[in-house]
Amino acid sequence: MSRLSGGIALQPSELGQSVRILFYLPVITPWWFDAIVAPMVERLAEGHEVHILAPVPWSGTGVGPDQIGRCAHLSQLHWHIVDGPDHPTMRCEPADRAGIIEFVHTLAPDYVLCRSADCETVQAFPGTVRHIMEGGAAPLSIPPEWVIFQQAPFDHGLLPDLTEAEAARLDVLFAPEWERLSAERRTSRHMRKAFREWAELPKDRAVLTIPLEYEHEENFFAMHRIGARPNAALVAELAERIDDRFFLAFTNHPLNEKHVDNSAVIAAIAAHPERMRLLPGIDPEDASTTMTLARDADGMMIGDTKAFALGAFYGTPMLRRTHFRTGEWLNAYNDMDDFLRAVEEGRAAVPDDDYARRWFAYHVANNVFDPNDPDLMGADILARIDMPHDPARWENGIARYRAAMEVDA
Image 1 (cartoon, rainbow, N blue to C red):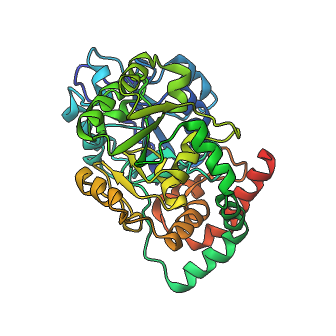
Image 2 (image 1 turned 30 degrees about the vertical axis):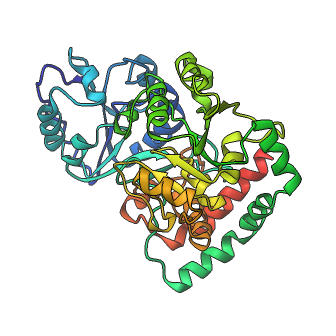
């Protein structure tokens, strides 16, 4: 096993294969490696030269003996494990960024698949670089193992320029799923009233919903957030910036509720009982409170959370503070003062419903895939990189999603 430490660049072995693939995994977690990356490595290693570059375990991320053992049957796999004293810095801002970039240039991959919060380093890599990101987009019922490839980690809601024929085809392919989802949007007035009473939402001012993001130590992607961190500091910031003309309804990330000490954020919200509230993750109807608030709130304030899809689905005005791209059809605000004025005056722009339907259809048909699909081949994975937009895979994509929903039901 080769090692990269102390700034010493390794010379990769030359196997003479036509395609060389690098998995760059500084923030990979054990679950992600086992459930998502290892199945892709197995398929790609069947016909290509595959390398894995990652640090040793630290703060819930990295590659250790368990991950190497998971791929022990792949004798042709090349491991490059960073174990020098600076290896923790790979997660956010590498102390030896130049050394990493030099090594990857020496390796000369044709493709780089990343699980990296540090975007600056990977932008300097050769080959075609893609980030492996979560495929979930509620209210779609996408299994947690399904993923997408993106040019940047949190580019949300992007759509290519579709021809009229392509748009019409998506509408037809996704029609049964969209009809079912649309039926769920038509909630009775009685149910909405019951939810507002349970949540103790005021009637005399606009309600803004804020889904808090994951802040476990393993989530280095939080480095990109705009605004105060951690979540308790964000609450304090919003309390300072938003006055009592608005009521703030917070929900916590499900993994925060499982794995994080939430006492500070609970106390920060409890300090303003007349202006804000932290609601349980599940409402009395056994539904996601975040989803229900996205439906009933007057506005939604988000950063890089996937909850943007809920605002898109329910047509809820959104403020998105981010360094990444946002689909124009979402009509998301990026200035808080502009957003607050528009919500208060009842003129806030909302996501385009026709494009919302199209985006959900395109996400399922074109973007999301299951690394554990028994029919998935290495060529299929590379095709998703070479051809990000490919109508030829739409029908199978919809069918796979439909089959997964039937199994889940």
